[in-house]
Length: 352
Length: 288
Image (cartoon, rainbow over all chains, first blue to last red; front, top):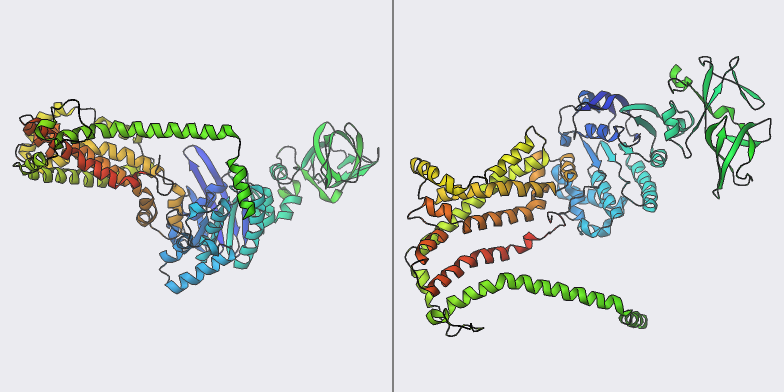
């Protein structure tokens, strides 16, 4: 077990800056996701931690010991690769035992550890098969078992579920969570899938353009996005951003006058989660023109505009709203995020 | 049980058109196989016929399907001819040197080309190919002179070295393709799970590249075995089999030439046949 400190790490490929000074601390036993769109540097960061890539600047410490310059094998970590990277010329057993064999573990320990890892991932019946006889999901399990068998201090996962179909992904996600919780290993999980990150992580680090935009618990990141990017990237539908004028430190929303942070200028961006609204009547509510109403079964998804700015909101499935209606919305003032129109950062994050 | 027969019945009574499509594609497949076999086997068969048919069989027309009056006399005569056994071992030696050197030097070059980005990589690749751009005929004289100076003239080692030069560009470029076919992630997984670069190469990359490496070795062998020109120019007494036959056979009777030709073809054919399974993909890679 070990904590990981990423200290002002930079990485450039030629003129391209993949990572622009990233700092992040991951506590012992914690599950942290690096979440972001492709090209945001999350995989590069993971590969730097693994030692498969060298940082241009900065320091990585695992268990308070700098690992800069150490070969991957000397960092005490295990990794699950996006394409599984299960060795095709070895049986499943030999694959799972690979790391232990390299550590010169004696045969009884190898046997016990393989049996344990295989049991956790339900691959006991495939142990003497070759990987080309396995499905993608089974190979994925082998890759995870191989990583867990060495009881690593740190487990790195690079989009491990992205090659599975949707149903299997959901199943594996639940299973991963159960398995990793019992293992208690410090885990860094790279993904572009926000539901994976939300569901699995203790904390999420949202990355964008080579920097970490926000680090926080899933609920925190969801409810209090530090930047416009985070709010827009996390949540389905994404957070709505409505630019509204400020007068006397307040914003007029229907019949309500909501106070805005003191730092706000003449205009402020109101960040609103689609589900943080209730249907109310006009003119008490905030006016929304509904362009399309989509009953989704569990809820009603409305696409339209507020103050001529596009929004998407969610209402209970029991409400009846039709295309073209104009409705009034009551906002949950506790769940509004105020952002600066200039920097795109939330005021609460700017103060912190 | 009943259910099974039922489904079988319905399967055999399936619509006619896919079945006839399948049968016509099978017909195409088999005719293709027969054509390709004939392309390779008929000449070999004719050579064998000439060799086995004895003195009369060679000039007999029309050819009989089976050789009339089989005699092994030309073979025995051929094998007992002075210098044949000696040159056979020379050929083996030269081919062995070629295989060993082109794999030992070519495979690391191919690995570097496949895995590393370095300055001048493309020009290097071009340079490797350019070594084949100089015709041996032009190089023959300077080579002979310098080989005499170095004491390599008329030695198996000298021929092996020249054949290595011929096979090496091929070996480097083909092994590059083979190593590219081994996913880099497998190697990285080996590093993460406790291997040094060298260990990862031997534990993961080499076993997966083995079929391709064996194929490369076989081709290097065949290149050396079949090469005549350099071997003829650079040797006088220590001739390889091809070079030796070239000088001897032109003054020999027909059936004797056929016997020599057959014995020359057979090792290549047998060798390739023996390693044929390595030429196909074993683990689904290196098949490209």
